[in-house]
Image 1 (cartoon, rainbow, N blue to C red):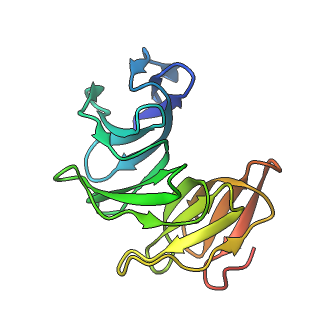
Image 2: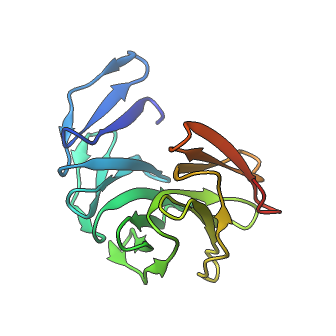
Length: 193
């Protein structure tokens, strides 16, 4: 409903729901051992929590604050992104250098896709509705087509990226460069920083 935000608390193995109308934190909820990232699932009123420590993504129903059954996705998941129709979550596994689709209706894993070194942040969008992977160790952004699952050539970045987000017009990917404490735009059509 948009009235609750959720924050991952990596160091404490919890997530904290925040009531936006009341402007206050609610009691923390235990989820795994190192919850690292969150993604909203639409339709539905839930978020998926990537738990780096347990190798799972964990559904959390936001309205009831009910924790669902964890789905094992592989070693060290660092990010999760969900397609706009809510059917598939994509999860990055840091040491495996892969992104893996999770079919949410069946909670089953699809075929992992090899990407650059140390995938750390994910975003879905752009004019071709693609998955964008921020490769921390490779200091690059990789576009993975979702209609035909093929990674493109890595786009070099000016440092190690930790997160990515798609602009509202789907023409730009904003990438957080963790080693420089800056955010850089990447134009989707040209692949230029």
